Every structure is written in C-alpha cells, then in structure tokens.
Length: 325
Length: 253
Image 1 (cartoon, rainbow over the protein chains, first blue to last red):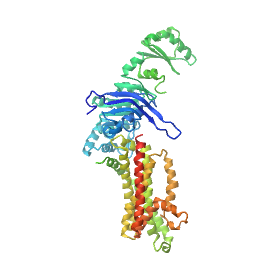
Image 2: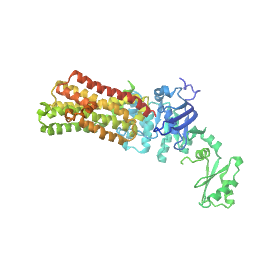
Image 3: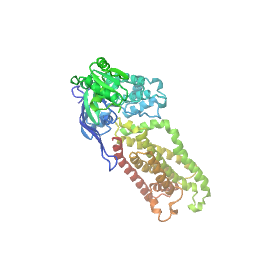
Image 4: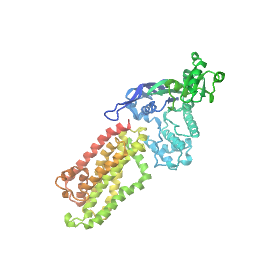
C-alpha cells in the first residue's frame, strides 16, 4: 500500500491551509492555517510547537480527517482525507485536547464503547481493553465511574482509548496541558513506550520541555505558518547560542543595564541580547565568562542564572515573543 | 454491520446506565398527567359534551402523541446539543471511521427507540385503564412514534446549528408548550375560534393527536389517517434531509 513502503512519508502536506467561514454575514473568514508544508516518516515522533492560536489544533483536526482543508494537499497513509476519511480514521488514534470521556460509563465501558465504533468484535475489544487498562495503569479503576479518576488518570484513559484500534498514527493535542509534573512524567513514559513499539506520534504542545523530551523532529508554528523545522538540537543550534545568561535588574536599572550588556557580546559569533519586560537574556557561548564580564563592568544584577538554550529561546528568536505570551 | 448501528449501539450502552432517570421524565410524568387530568379532573367533564366519550377516553390518546413530542424534544434537542457542545460525544464518534451521517442516523435510531418504548409503556397503561374503545388502539404506538420522529428529526437538524443551550429552552417554552396546549390534546380544536382553527391544522402535533385519537376510538378513516401519516412522514423526511447537511457542516468543521 502507498505510504507503507518506508520510502514515501506517512504524512505529506503541501500548502495546507484552513480558513473558517465567517460566523455571520458581516464577519470575515478566519485563516487559522495559512499554507504549510511538512512531512512525517513512519515511526517518528513529530511535534507542532507554538503558542495558543498558532494553528496547531486546526492542523491536528485536518490530520484527524474531521476538518476539510480549504487549501493545499494532504496525504495520510497515501490517501486523501477528502475521499478516504473513513479508511484513514480507521488507522488513526486521536487524543483530543479535552478528555471527552463518557461520564455515565465506567472506565472499562469507555474503552468498550470506543471499540464498538471501530467495529471490533466483542472478543477482541475485551482482550485489548484488559491490555490497555494495564498499559494505562488503571486496572484497579476498571469498574469505577469516571468521577473516581484524577486528571492524569483521565488523560491516560483517553490515550488508552485511542489505542483500541491499534493505530499506525497517534495524534495528541496538548497531551499534558493541565497535569502536574509527576503525571506528566508518567505520561511521557507511556508515550515513549508507544514510540518504541513503532507507533508514529504527532503532537502539539506549547511546552518546550515536552517537545524536547518527545520529538525527533518538530515544526515551530506561529500565526498559521511554519517558522522553521528540524530536530530540537538542530533548531537550538540554528537559532540560539549554547548557553543563556539570564539576568534580573532593579526596575530603574533595567534599561540602562540592557544598553551596557550590548557591549559585552560578540554579534559576529551569534551572540546577542534579548530584553524582556522582567529580565534580560544574554545569548552567549560561555555563560560563566560573560557573567564574569558583567561583574567586571560593575553591573549588579539581583539574580543571575546560566542555563542551556532551549526551544523556548528558538521560539523567542523566530517570533519575537515568548511561548506563554 | 452498517456504521450507523455502531452509533446506535454506543447509545444503548450508555442507556444501560441512564435508563432509570429517563423513566421518570419520559414515562412516569405523562402517566401522572393521564391519571390527574384524565381520570381526576376529567370527571368534571360531562360525557354528553364529548359525544358520549369519557374525558379519559378523549384525553389519553391525545396525550400519547403530546408525550411523544415532548420526548422528541428531550432527545432531539437537549441530548443532541449535549452531544455536540458539552459532552462532545459526537466529536468522539467523529474521530472513528463514522461519518457525520452515520452519527446522525444512529442517534435518530436511538431517539426512535426512546420515543417508541415510552409510547409503548403509555399505551399499555392506557389500555389497562380502559381508556381505549377499539382494537386499532394498538396502532397508537407506531402513530406516536411517527409523531415523535416528525419532531425529533427536524429538531436534531436545527439543534446542531445552535450554540447556546438557552435558545433551546426558549423554543421549548414559547413554541413547544403552546403547541402542547392548542393541538387538541386537552380539548378539541373545534372549540377554537374560527380564525385560529386553520392554524391548528398546520401544527404537526394536531396531526399526531388526531391520528392517535381516531385510532383509539375506532373512528379513523383511511383518507384522514393517510393525510396525517403523510404529513408527519414528510416532516420526518425533511428533517433527515436537513440533518444530513447540518450534521456534516457542524461536525466536520
């Protein structure tokens, strides 16, 4: 089958776009995705990183074949969503942003119901349900109503549910938003296992640490467009320095200090200063040395922190804004 | 198995957990009305003013149709809105091989199940109370079902386009309730003023009420029954046709 030979990508988008119709006669349409190109290979973990409103969820809905593209072409598993939506969806697993689980049903029944939607025989549903309950670490909650689950458990159940049809591709929209750190790590571990089993993962996130943990390759999205594409390390290398010196000054010294810092960096080697409302970021190859130079210049930051560059810095460079703006 | 049956099965799975609470509103409520008004208040009505009928005999078949309409609103408007906007059950189904038309057809089938079983329960009590006069009364069950679907299908088609739950409440209060009262359920529309009567003939519920009543009393004629069935059938078909479009537009956004 096309898309399965390993040579052609599993997913290919060219000039893909989505414009929503206006809500009333006077309104204008909204172009949430403004023509993007990307491809995803089998077995990859591919991320869409960007702030709220960047067009990530709209892209995910098009990939899930529940939202027709209004421009460009999209091929998933070698098929066209406009024509073969049913066939594609039969091989997808979808984890939506909100856990839309059925509150009237038990944990196990939620899985059963989803299995029915895929037309699986009862015997198969039963066997997979037990396996997935174990995978999601929910065996003890199997017979309980949904109300008995914590946020992290609900998320794991939603992921377990999306696996009932043993999908080739798993679409995860903001998989860990709203979860506490421990629940996030449990979830990351589960997703990592899936990846090792050969499931292709596509996820959106506005957490840079999540993208760095999970994604082999990602695109940075902003205002409906792709700003750049690559592995987390590539992107960091391309758009940032190895280290970042974060400095905080007293409010009345903030501007002045930022001015002086410009003299300490070597723009020819990619070093630069980024002034944020609450702090100044100095992009440098050697944070400690730069910090020593700051002290030598008789500047007195309230706090100083040397850290590695992250995707957050990449995003700041590409869009001029922080991810949480 | 056709895809829409998967949607129906999922509703049935859910129904196994929720049927108890629906019994109250769908079956017990109309039966309380039947007893309180039909057998209680109705004693005050002189049978000579109803051409020899007791008020219970007059009222019961009208109420089976009106109850079907009310159940159609609960299932076709409130439950549809919940599935699209709040619980998002439709979105869950849409992520699977089901198309919007399968989701629509499966849910309509479940609505038919709910309306039909409620009508059946009502008919059994109606007959046990001796409120029917003809063996044709058994046909009040499919007649009430058709009446319900003539509301449920167009309502479902419209509801998926509605954002605010409050809109549904308003329509219930200002459209459904007047129809409930002025479609011949509680009193014959012959008693309405001349200028208002033609309006009643247009109301779908009147067709349902008259169909059920003439069947229950054994006065149904082929022609008038065919007109009623045709009218209600046409509304159901129009509702399904509209729902095919609105479901696609509002689920595959």
